[in-house]
Image (tube, rainbow, N blue to C red; front, side, top):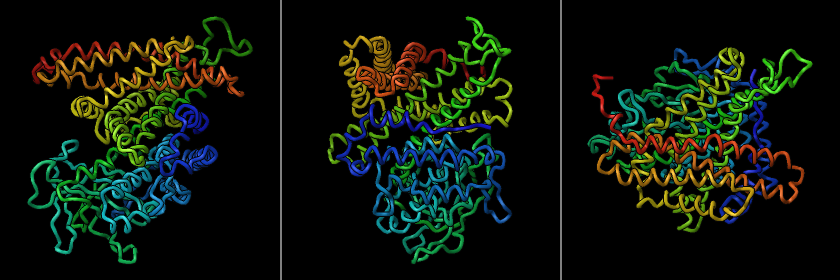
Length: 598
């Protein structure tokens, strides 16, 4: 059976040493996040994930969710109790507004906990994860009355939240939605329509479910300009906060899907359900994007999380499984064969996953800190710069971490040979669960087009230029450090590839948009690789500094960081040249065939 140990030590190294979380103590909530508090929070979170959530992962996958005759849904055994433990531990409200019962700690700590929970049990983690996204949307766009009504119970974990976008006839193109909202005359609306692929749409773990639903008010403009957002509780809520009868909201069916079987993915029917407008009429996408952007970062973390847990199990197997002899002579002469970890190709595979995981974790934390700055800083320029970076990097995080996370789950499965294909070892579940992250919250091809078509040129390219300046400044600042030169030289070359690709789009995509479309995914991965390389540069600089200072007992760990950084620069980063070559080949061959020739 698979195992999982939360990477607390590596995370603390990133928070304390690489990103110096204490430097943000001027932001609300950060002063309370002292090193001792952070270590205690992560330690307790790790314990919950390892001891409560992880043991339910395989069984939850095998059992799945069941829709009952009355439309209710039963989640796998143990999920309800696990959610109770998760909620009572305060994990849903970790970074939420204290005014409504949250602890007000940095969002960054919530992102870390999301990784731990998603590695331990991705299907389970989606229940509180979606609630946290709904809380964020209501907190930003909800009225004071809506916040008072919903947020305390949601933060407490007594009620959960979802988002309802997709319909049978439309996914990414939300302008096509047909769900309608008719004014009731009392400030509420009657919501009627069908939504599909609604994660956690119905379940038995909370006493009420608060759905955020996109719908079109009668007479609204066509397309996305006529979409509004509504809060629609599954059960009516009395003036005293009591939960009443069903609000004409029902689960029509549960999807039979490839993975995340422990999460109920529902077809939701709204038959004149009473809902209330969130924010302004016809501005629903603005409000929903708060939740969607949080969800996209959460999905990026899922890609990392499945890569991490798959890696941990592959390493354990590679150390234990004996097969063949080392190319340089027997390493275990007392055994019939050597452990497969002696073989270079096995090590290449494991090192590629390890090098990605550690840099991806840093990439997540770096951007989570920017989210905290964007939402909590009193300095307008600082908030703007952080928001610029988040806008640029959100599609990169979502697209790259889930693409590579899935690939890494497959690579880890490969380490097991035939055993990796068998359910009892758990590796095939990691592959199945990781696959959805590339699809939902905007398929990765859409993320790439969002990056190239919208984010790259926004505000005159301000965000990408700031990134060029930051990475270029780091390379120049540390260029004379002989120990770092072997890492910074390839990073500088890859940064050059990224700059060339950006200029090529500027010169070739305006006149012919297909050039942007054909190169978008390559550009997303090119930017992702340079970002991960930058993270390794920052990690290596700190590791090198610690070694020079004596390392305080961490010599082996810091040397391991430097070797892993070198592997990434030598083995992963050179792929930027291939991405550049594909981008600059243009769209001719891609678009040359007629549809009938495929």
